[in-house]
Image 1 (cartoon, rainbow, N blue to C red):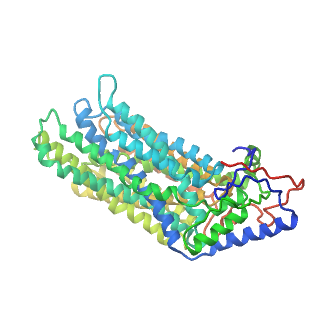
Image 2: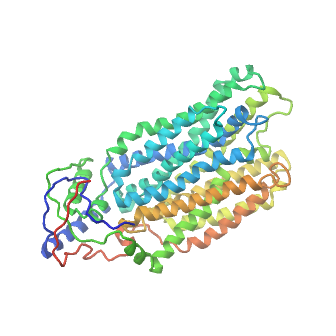
Image 3: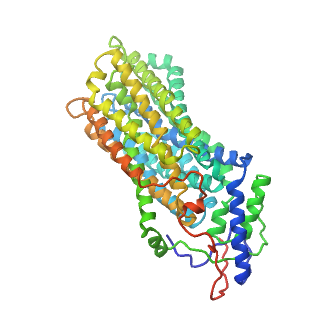
Length: 552
């Protein structure tokens, strides 16, 4: 946190005058005005503006998921072109897959903090610019004597991860702070569900690109698969297109009224913004408006420590953080290695009679189709099952149910692995259960761990706390990917997969326990969930100090 030496001016004003702080009665009126404006936001009917928020925030998650999970297929293609023996070494495959979660962890902490310090609006769009540049740079990366293309891709994927990380707290908090109480869960789920469409699009593009280059690929020299180099670059590069489309809308989205009121402490501008976006879907900035600063709790290290020194607040942060950590152990352990797992169980493996480029083509095609099946059968339905029930059943029951189901499923898959992969019929059963794990990840903790931290903390720490929770999840993703890479081939190629599934079951079990620490946020306003008294939240300054205005 930071101490504001000079109060930041609202995004709505650049008035250079220095007004005196309002006296007691005016402040009381502003406190009532604040609560009335928040009630308007909390009780508003679903409108075009709400839909716009979902679309603008959702496109970011579409791009994030496409860029993250396209490497699941692209790494095999890159291996054919640049790998020793047409296969990436374990450390190269690990580098490509773990670079993004490492960058994401940094971005979640950095942008989460910055959004609470300088504003949601000021940071929104910057993370998308980073993603666009880094994604395009991957597609045009080259190989030379002085530099390895794998090293260049690792660097660019790490930078891309920083942008992706920034998208988590920003999109979550912006959506929750604009949403009405009765639809907040569905709005946040709709935004997050775009991950599924992003993953689906990556699989579809991979299939289309593979089929489009079929003739050229089959004509290649088996020792020099030059057309595969085109394929992975197209697959990765297309990931920046939706981001470019969404960039303008992110840069022009208004500041949330809660930030303007509670952090910038400009109640009048915030109430005006509420009236405008609820009636016309727009907002108006008056550069000549005088700013009436009020006194409200500020984000400082001392205040942060005081807030989280209370067990009811600290246990919630621990609950949201560890639940996300435990979930991402399995979610990314599986999601970034679906191709490896499908190969390990023999699902869609190339015909043994095939050789040369024909075998390469069928392998790439089968991996793409296998990913598509898993996504369609499990991931996407899970998101929308949560969408249907999150505002009626609640976040905590869905998360608890998901962790319980995942614990059981991973136990069955792990301890029954040998029998479930013994025959073609059994492999179909394994594939079905594997799809169910994807379903209950999304109809369960993968969605709720995103929602709850965006609701359950006060405005001045909401984005920071979401960033801490999300970064804990990415720490789990890093642990999972490093562990998967180092353990999967113990005893032979892919021989340790069954034990990895058993390890995932253990972490799902611990997720059940951490879920007990979180609160149910369904049907409650963000102010009620902040665990702070909202009556008299805005107070007169006892010294009647002059508010300092500085233009940012």
